[in-house]
Picture (cartoon, rainbow, N blue to C red):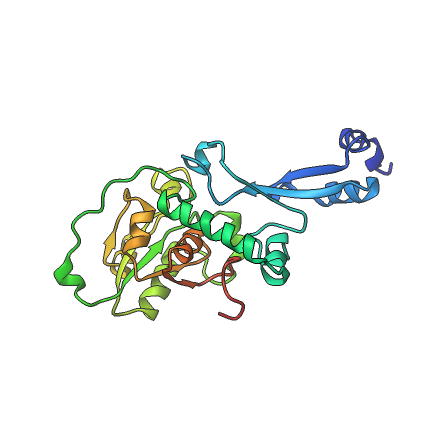
Length: 248
């Protein structure tokens, strides 16, 4: 017996709607087919760039959400509304001025994606650092869709640290594990052999303090890179985040 999409509960609901919102990676071919059949506009939704206070693993209600009719901003395999907006939209002076004020407001308030309270920075070994550039390497959750869809070559924190040490052998490298990983809730811990790949591990410090401290940020595709760019820090990506220059 042939399955009919028209007889599913979702099909009945779509008959009275003009749009459907699907969270993250939950979109299936069946849902896409149903939307096309009923003339329903399909939207993808994900956490925005300011979560509020708390980690994703804690299911904290986000302060912002990203809606995209083409794709997801962290998926480098498909275009997104954000990508099209950044590459092809002319922005007038008034909108650019408004964006500049918002950017400065985020900087002044020291807002980041998670805004998890951190300890003050410890005293750094200034004699050891000397004139060496300070490089911040933010760890990521290795099972996140952002890595699966946005970092085709380097996919683990240990691989990232090895690549950074190879590229910046003279740098003082600070590694900041992802809070979801240090809590034990998500995948991404490094083994003891990786301890030689960085100079200092800071677990509980505020990420914004570390961004302000760094001369460079090296990341797969973490939003920390975007937050660094907003604050004028040089950022090197090893994946394909939305904020990376094409061919850069």
